[in-house]
Length: 298
Image (tube, rainbow, N blue to C red; front, side, top):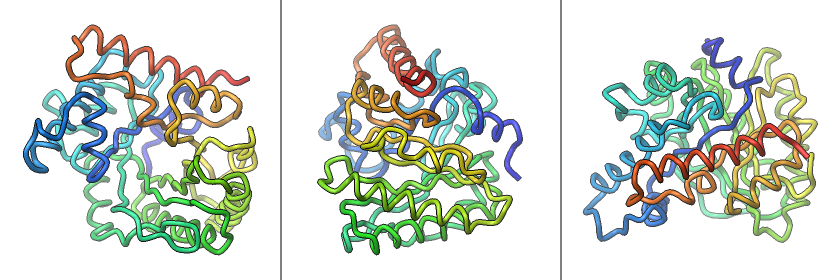
Protein backbone atom coordinates (compact mmCIF):
# COMPACT_ATOMS: atom_id res chain seq x y z
CA UNK A 1 0.00 0.00 0.00
CA UNK A 2 1.19 3.51 -0.75
CA UNK A 3 2.29 5.60 2.23
CA UNK A 4 -0.77 7.54 3.44
CA UNK A 5 1.21 10.72 4.15
CA UNK A 6 2.75 10.63 0.70
CA UNK A 7 -0.66 10.01 -0.85
CA UNK A 8 -2.17 12.96 1.02
CA UNK A 9 0.66 15.21 -0.16
CA UNK A 10 0.28 14.11 -3.77
CA UNK A 11 -3.51 14.38 -3.72
CA UNK A 12 -3.98 17.82 -2.22
CA UNK A 13 -0.66 19.40 -1.29
CA UNK A 14 0.21 22.78 -2.85
CA UNK A 15 3.25 22.64 -5.10
CA UNK A 16 4.71 20.82 -8.08
CA UNK A 17 6.83 17.85 -9.13
CA UNK A 18 10.50 18.26 -10.04
CA UNK A 19 11.42 16.00 -12.97
CA UNK A 20 15.06 15.03 -12.29
CA UNK A 21 14.99 11.99 -14.56
CA UNK A 22 17.11 12.76 -17.63
CA UNK A 23 18.73 9.50 -18.71
CA UNK A 24 20.74 7.92 -21.49
CA UNK A 25 20.56 10.01 -24.63
CA UNK A 26 19.21 13.13 -22.91
CA UNK A 27 22.00 13.34 -20.33
CA UNK A 28 24.72 14.95 -22.51
CA UNK A 29 22.33 17.72 -23.51
CA UNK A 30 21.30 18.33 -19.91
CA UNK A 31 24.94 18.48 -18.81
CA UNK A 32 25.86 20.81 -21.68
CA UNK A 33 23.06 23.19 -20.68
CA UNK A 34 24.46 23.07 -17.13
CA UNK A 35 27.90 24.02 -18.44
CA UNK A 36 29.60 20.62 -18.65
CA UNK A 37 30.62 19.75 -22.25
CA UNK A 38 31.06 16.18 -23.47
CA UNK A 39 34.82 16.73 -23.50
CA UNK A 40 34.74 17.02 -19.70
CA UNK A 41 33.99 13.34 -19.10
CA UNK A 42 34.94 9.96 -20.52
CA UNK A 43 32.33 7.24 -20.81
CA UNK A 44 28.98 6.65 -19.19
CA UNK A 45 30.27 6.26 -15.65
CA UNK A 46 31.81 9.75 -15.58
CA UNK A 47 28.81 11.22 -17.40
CA UNK A 48 26.33 9.81 -14.91
CA UNK A 49 28.55 10.81 -11.99
CA UNK A 50 28.47 14.42 -13.23
CA UNK A 51 24.68 14.19 -13.62
CA UNK A 52 24.30 12.76 -10.12
CA UNK A 53 26.39 15.58 -8.67
CA UNK A 54 24.10 18.10 -10.36
CA UNK A 55 20.99 16.40 -9.00
CA UNK A 56 22.38 16.17 -5.48
CA UNK A 57 23.22 19.88 -5.63
CA UNK A 58 19.59 20.56 -6.54
CA UNK A 59 18.09 18.19 -3.95
CA UNK A 60 20.21 19.57 -1.10
CA UNK A 61 19.58 23.24 -1.92
CA UNK A 62 17.66 25.17 0.77
CA UNK A 63 14.58 25.80 -1.41
CA UNK A 64 14.17 22.17 -2.46
CA UNK A 65 11.69 21.03 0.20
CA UNK A 66 8.16 19.68 0.35
CA UNK A 67 6.88 23.16 1.15
CA UNK A 68 6.82 23.82 -2.61
CA UNK A 69 8.30 20.72 -4.27
CA UNK A 70 5.81 17.93 -3.64
CA UNK A 71 7.79 15.20 -5.36
CA UNK A 72 10.81 14.41 -7.51
CA UNK A 73 11.01 11.96 -10.40
CA UNK A 74 14.31 10.06 -10.40
CA UNK A 75 16.34 8.16 -12.96
CA UNK A 76 17.17 4.59 -11.83
CA UNK A 77 20.83 5.46 -11.18
CA UNK A 78 19.72 8.41 -9.05
CA UNK A 79 17.39 6.17 -7.04
CA UNK A 80 20.32 3.83 -6.42
CA UNK A 81 22.64 6.68 -5.42
CA UNK A 82 23.11 8.64 -2.21
CA UNK A 83 22.61 12.20 -1.00
CA UNK A 84 24.38 13.28 2.18
CA UNK A 85 25.08 9.65 3.07
CA UNK A 86 21.51 8.41 2.67
CA UNK A 87 19.80 6.54 -0.19
CA UNK A 88 18.29 9.25 -2.38
CA UNK A 89 14.62 8.23 -1.85
CA UNK A 90 15.17 8.15 1.93
CA UNK A 91 16.91 11.53 1.87
CA UNK A 92 14.16 13.12 -0.20
CA UNK A 93 11.30 12.00 2.03
CA UNK A 94 12.86 11.97 5.49
CA UNK A 95 15.07 15.02 5.20
CA UNK A 96 13.27 17.18 2.63
CA UNK A 97 9.63 16.08 2.73
CA UNK A 98 9.71 15.37 -1.03
CA UNK A 99 7.94 12.27 -2.38
CA UNK A 100 10.18 10.04 -4.56
CA UNK A 101 9.05 8.72 -7.95
CA UNK A 102 11.01 6.57 -10.43
CA UNK A 103 11.17 6.82 -14.21
CA UNK A 104 10.76 3.26 -15.52
CA UNK A 105 10.47 3.49 -19.32
CA UNK A 106 13.45 2.42 -21.45
CA UNK A 107 13.00 4.53 -24.56
CA UNK A 108 10.70 4.70 -27.54
CA UNK A 109 9.88 2.53 -30.53
CA UNK A 110 10.12 3.94 -34.06
CA UNK A 111 7.22 6.19 -35.06
CA UNK A 112 4.09 4.46 -36.38
CA UNK A 113 0.52 5.76 -36.77
CA UNK A 114 1.65 9.20 -35.65
CA UNK A 115 2.98 8.03 -32.26
CA UNK A 116 6.01 6.49 -30.57
CA UNK A 117 5.11 3.66 -28.22
CA UNK A 118 7.38 2.65 -25.37
CA UNK A 119 9.87 -0.11 -25.93
CA UNK A 120 9.29 -3.21 -23.79
CA UNK A 121 10.46 -2.49 -20.23
CA UNK A 122 12.90 -5.27 -19.43
CA UNK A 123 13.02 -6.49 -15.84
CA UNK A 124 10.16 -4.21 -14.79
CA UNK A 125 8.86 -6.36 -11.92
CA UNK A 126 12.29 -6.67 -10.30
CA UNK A 127 12.88 -2.92 -10.72
CA UNK A 128 9.53 -2.18 -9.08
CA UNK A 129 10.31 -4.51 -6.19
CA UNK A 130 13.60 -2.70 -5.65
CA UNK A 131 11.87 0.67 -5.82
CA UNK A 132 9.34 -0.40 -3.18
CA UNK A 133 12.19 -1.54 -0.95
CA UNK A 134 13.83 1.88 -1.26
CA UNK A 135 10.66 3.74 -0.29
CA UNK A 136 9.63 4.99 -3.73
CA UNK A 137 5.97 6.07 -3.96
CA UNK A 138 5.28 5.87 -7.69
CA UNK A 139 6.63 5.71 -11.22
CA UNK A 140 6.59 7.62 -14.49
CA UNK A 141 6.74 6.36 -18.07
CA UNK A 142 6.70 8.41 -21.27
CA UNK A 143 5.45 7.83 -24.79
CA UNK A 144 4.99 10.42 -27.54
CA UNK A 145 2.10 11.60 -29.73
CA UNK A 146 3.06 13.50 -32.88
CA UNK A 147 -0.18 13.42 -34.90
CA UNK A 148 -3.94 13.22 -34.32
CA UNK A 149 -4.16 9.56 -35.33
CA UNK A 150 -6.97 7.91 -33.38
CA UNK A 151 -5.59 4.38 -33.70
CA UNK A 152 -2.12 5.49 -32.71
CA UNK A 153 -3.31 7.46 -29.69
CA UNK A 154 -5.56 4.59 -28.60
CA UNK A 155 -2.53 2.27 -28.77
CA UNK A 156 -0.44 4.71 -26.71
CA UNK A 157 -3.08 4.97 -24.00
CA UNK A 158 -3.75 1.23 -23.97
CA UNK A 159 -0.05 0.51 -23.44
CA UNK A 160 0.19 3.12 -20.69
CA UNK A 161 -2.77 1.66 -18.79
CA UNK A 162 -1.63 -1.94 -19.24
CA UNK A 163 1.79 -1.24 -17.76
CA UNK A 164 0.26 1.14 -15.23
CA UNK A 165 -1.80 -1.70 -13.80
CA UNK A 166 1.32 -3.87 -13.55
CA UNK A 167 2.99 -1.05 -11.63
CA UNK A 168 -0.04 -0.55 -9.38
CA UNK A 169 0.00 -4.26 -8.50
CA UNK A 170 3.26 -3.55 -6.62
CA UNK A 171 1.55 -0.87 -4.52
CA UNK A 172 3.06 2.00 -6.51
CA UNK A 173 1.19 4.92 -8.06
CA UNK A 174 1.88 5.15 -11.80
CA UNK A 175 2.18 8.44 -13.66
CA UNK A 176 1.04 7.84 -17.24
CA UNK A 177 2.81 10.24 -19.62
CA UNK A 178 1.43 10.31 -23.18
CA UNK A 179 3.20 13.48 -24.34
CA UNK A 180 1.68 15.41 -27.23
CA UNK A 181 4.60 17.23 -28.84
CA UNK A 182 4.13 20.99 -28.68
CA UNK A 183 5.43 21.41 -32.26
CA UNK A 184 2.77 19.13 -33.76
CA UNK A 185 0.52 20.87 -36.31
CA UNK A 186 -2.29 18.61 -35.09
CA UNK A 187 -1.78 19.01 -31.34
CA UNK A 188 -5.21 20.41 -30.51
CA UNK A 189 -6.99 17.58 -32.33
CA UNK A 190 -4.59 15.05 -30.80
CA UNK A 191 -5.38 16.34 -27.32
CA UNK A 192 -9.12 15.92 -27.97
CA UNK A 193 -8.58 12.26 -28.87
CA UNK A 194 -6.17 11.79 -25.97
CA UNK A 195 -8.65 13.09 -23.40
CA UNK A 196 -11.35 10.74 -24.68
CA UNK A 197 -9.01 7.74 -24.51
CA UNK A 198 -7.72 8.64 -21.06
CA UNK A 199 -11.24 9.00 -19.69
CA UNK A 200 -12.20 5.60 -21.11
CA UNK A 201 -9.10 4.07 -19.58
CA UNK A 202 -9.79 5.58 -16.17
CA UNK A 203 -13.41 4.44 -16.26
CA UNK A 204 -12.26 0.86 -16.92
CA UNK A 205 -9.90 0.69 -13.95
CA UNK A 206 -10.89 -1.03 -10.68
CA UNK A 207 -12.90 1.20 -8.36
CA UNK A 208 -10.03 1.64 -5.89
CA UNK A 209 -7.36 2.45 -8.49
CA UNK A 210 -5.26 5.60 -8.06
CA UNK A 211 -3.33 6.83 -11.11
CA UNK A 212 -1.67 10.08 -12.12
CA UNK A 213 -1.32 11.55 -15.61
CA UNK A 214 1.38 13.79 -17.06
CA UNK A 215 0.52 15.67 -20.25
CA UNK A 216 1.66 18.64 -22.27
CA UNK A 217 0.11 21.97 -21.25
CA UNK A 218 -2.95 21.90 -23.50
CA UNK A 219 -3.70 24.23 -26.40
CA UNK A 220 -7.16 24.89 -24.96
CA UNK A 221 -7.01 26.08 -21.34
CA UNK A 222 -8.76 23.79 -18.88
CA UNK A 223 -8.96 21.04 -21.52
CA UNK A 224 -8.19 18.30 -18.99
CA UNK A 225 -10.73 19.44 -16.37
CA UNK A 226 -12.79 16.20 -16.72
CA UNK A 227 -9.66 14.12 -16.12
CA UNK A 228 -8.63 16.22 -13.12
CA UNK A 229 -12.09 15.62 -11.61
CA UNK A 230 -12.04 11.85 -12.20
CA UNK A 231 -12.23 9.97 -8.86
CA UNK A 232 -9.42 7.57 -9.83
CA UNK A 233 -7.00 10.38 -10.71
CA UNK A 234 -4.66 11.51 -7.93
CA UNK A 235 -3.29 14.47 -9.91
CA UNK A 236 -2.86 15.70 -13.47
CA UNK A 237 0.56 17.26 -13.99
CA UNK A 238 2.09 19.15 -16.88
CA UNK A 239 5.44 18.82 -18.60
CA UNK A 240 7.14 21.93 -19.96
CA UNK A 241 7.66 20.25 -23.33
CA UNK A 242 10.34 22.62 -24.60
CA UNK A 243 8.69 25.87 -23.53
CA UNK A 244 10.86 28.29 -21.58
CA UNK A 245 10.03 28.53 -17.89
CA UNK A 246 8.31 31.88 -18.36
CA UNK A 247 6.08 30.61 -21.15
CA UNK A 248 5.38 27.26 -19.50
CA UNK A 249 4.37 28.99 -16.26
CA UNK A 250 2.17 31.50 -18.09
CA UNK A 251 0.36 28.69 -19.93
CA UNK A 252 0.06 26.51 -16.84
CA UNK A 253 -1.57 29.33 -14.88
CA UNK A 254 -4.59 29.11 -17.23
CA UNK A 255 -5.28 25.51 -16.18
CA UNK A 256 -6.98 25.19 -12.78
CA UNK A 257 -6.20 21.98 -10.93
CA UNK A 258 -3.12 21.19 -13.03
CA UNK A 259 0.34 21.40 -11.47
CA UNK A 260 3.79 21.40 -13.03
CA UNK A 261 6.17 18.51 -13.48
CA UNK A 262 8.97 20.44 -15.16
CA UNK A 263 12.48 19.33 -16.06
CA UNK A 264 14.32 21.70 -18.38
CA UNK A 265 12.18 24.64 -17.30
CA UNK A 266 13.21 24.02 -13.69
CA UNK A 267 16.97 23.91 -14.27
CA UNK A 268 17.41 26.23 -17.27
CA UNK A 269 19.11 28.98 -15.24
CA UNK A 270 21.49 26.70 -13.30
CA UNK A 271 25.19 26.49 -14.16
CA UNK A 272 27.94 24.30 -12.73
CA UNK A 273 30.31 27.23 -12.12
CA UNK A 274 27.82 29.21 -10.01
CA UNK A 275 28.73 29.89 -6.41
CA UNK A 276 26.52 28.02 -3.97
CA UNK A 277 24.85 31.31 -3.09
CA UNK A 278 24.07 32.12 -6.74
CA UNK A 279 22.97 28.54 -7.48
CA UNK A 280 20.63 28.42 -4.51
CA UNK A 281 19.15 31.81 -5.41
CA UNK A 282 18.56 30.83 -9.04
CA UNK A 283 16.97 27.51 -8.07
CA UNK A 284 14.86 29.23 -5.41
CA UNK A 285 13.57 31.72 -7.97
CA UNK A 286 12.70 28.91 -10.40
CA UNK A 287 10.90 26.97 -7.67
CA UNK A 288 8.92 30.09 -6.71
CA UNK A 289 7.88 30.71 -10.33
CA UNK A 290 6.75 27.14 -10.91
CA UNK A 291 5.03 26.90 -7.53
CA UNK A 292 3.09 30.09 -8.22
CA UNK A 293 1.96 28.85 -11.64
CA UNK A 294 0.89 25.54 -10.08
CA UNK A 295 -1.07 27.06 -7.20
CA UNK A 296 -2.25 30.52 -8.32
CA UNK A 297 -4.50 30.33 -11.35
CA UNK A 298 -5.71 33.07 -13.69
